[in-house]
Amino acid sequence: MERAAPRDGQPLSFQGVRGYGCGPIRNDRSKADAMSKSAVPHLANDQGVEKIFIGVRELNCMGARAPFDHPHVYLDMGDDGQILCPYCSTLYIYDPRLAPDQSDPMGCLVSLVEDFT
Image (cartoon, rainbow, N blue to C red; front, top):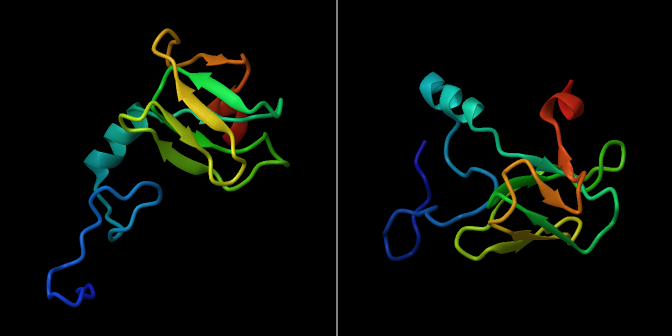
């Protein structure tokens, strides 16, 4: 299957695209194993606060805990240091003083075992 090319004849590039993957689905076991060892934390804004300070630059926002969650969306701040969730408008701000498993306000980090079992 070929990708469509833009009018100038150059192939499409997905470099710099944030969010959901755009490429073909691959069954690469080594990449899957590496990703499972470095899980991206899920965060929930059950308290309805405007801003959540976190100790990581990559996260999955789920809105609130089920059944009030929105589609879980992957967010990557890059070098910006903050990012706004397009679903719930929660502003996530990177705070280097926080550990990867901390948030301010406390209790926003969702355990993967708690949420997905």
